[in-house]
Amino acid sequence: MLRQLLASLVRSQVADLRRRATGGVVILVAAAALGIALTLALVALCLWLATLMAAWQAVAIVAGSVFVVALILFLVGRSTLRRRSAQAVELERLAQALGIDAKAKAAGETSFGLIAAAMLAGFILGRRLM
Image 1 (cartoon, rainbow, N blue to C red):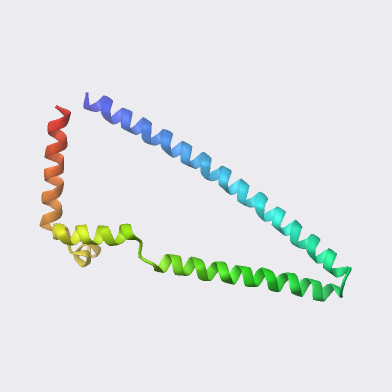
Image 2: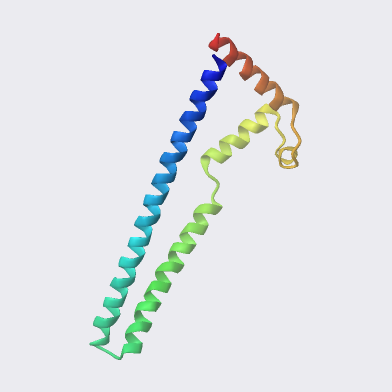
């Protein structure tokens, strides 16, 4: 029974991994196509602006605009990464409640509270499976 349960779990995980890998490849191809389309649109914009002004001025305007947009996106992304999510705050509070020391966890030490919680969870789950 345990062997069948483990085999089923492994099959499920392999299927999930294949699904995620396929999705990742599709996203990668879509990002490449988007990059090509954006490049062609920017070249077309440069060519159109070159009919109105000198070619170097058109390229400078388009490149400067792309630089400003990239800088704004960079700053927004950095501020998003620096903000602590509500989930991270909740996990830290839970760790403190269970007596898990974050510094000891980072050093690779295991606390008694973590071991006790794992044993209790294993006992409860084991009773439900039988």
